[in-house]
Image 1: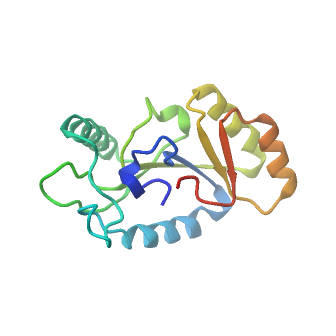
Image 2 (image 1 turned 120 degrees about the vertical axis):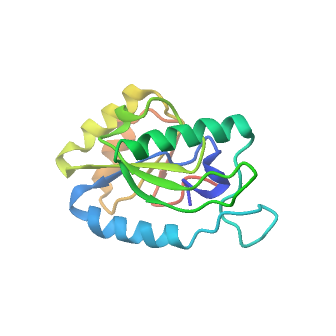
Image 3 (image 1 turned 135 degrees about the vertical axis):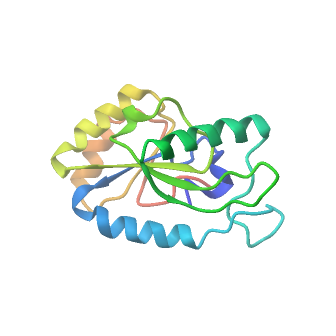
Length: 166
C-alpha cells in the first residue's frame, strides 16, 4: 500500500524496501499476492487502488525508467495498467540497495534489496548518505533494534510496524 496507492506519487510513498534475507522468499510470496489484489484504474472507481500519474511527462519518465530496469533483468513482478491516460504498470524490481536508485521515482515502482541482520546499521548508513530522508518505516519485534535505528536514521518521519502513508 505504501508503494502503490496514490500511484506512488506521495512524498512518503515507499520506494526502497529492504528485506532481511532470511525472510525474503516468504515475504516476496506475500508481496506478490498483495500486488495481485491491486486494481489499477479510474480513481473515481471505489474499487481502484492505483490511479494514473499526474501528467504525460511523468508517465513518459517513469515508463522509461521502468523499461530500463526491465531490460537490465531486475524485474520481479509487473502488473497490467489500463490503456490510455497516464497509467503506469505497478512494478517490483530487485536492486542491490538504495545506491542503485539514481533519483526518487514518484510512481508505482518499488525497489527491493536484501540484507543480513548483522548489516542493518550499514543499510541505515546507506540510506542516510543517499539523502532522500523524508519517511522511513521499520517492521520488527525487537525493541533494541527500534532504538538503534531510531538513534541513527536521519529522516523526518519514522514509522514503526505500520503503513508509512495516509
